[in-house]
Amino acid sequence: MIKLRYTIPNSFTAMSLLLGVASIITTQHGELKLAAWIIVWCGLLDVMDGVTARLLKATSNFGAEFDSMADLVAFGV
Image 1 (tube, rainbow, N blue to C red):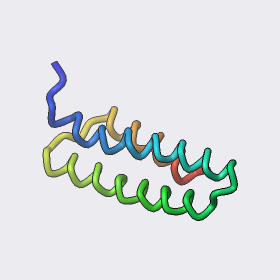
Image 2: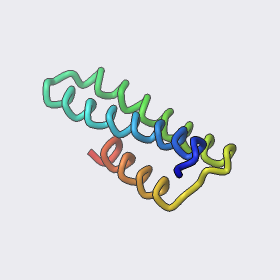
Image 3: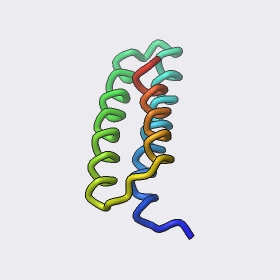
């Protein structure tokens, strides 16, 4: 059974991933200022997921890979 403490940091990562996709979509619609603000929020969520994972002692290989994928979508595009 997956422990609840692992889902909290992964929830921040999932939100960052979804916002990264939203940033791509808003960029395609020409809303560059909004896309930039969305990327700022992705950065804040990226910090929050790492901090909460360490505080809750909920680090995992899956979480690290999931975070890398979310970072690629949010910041690599």
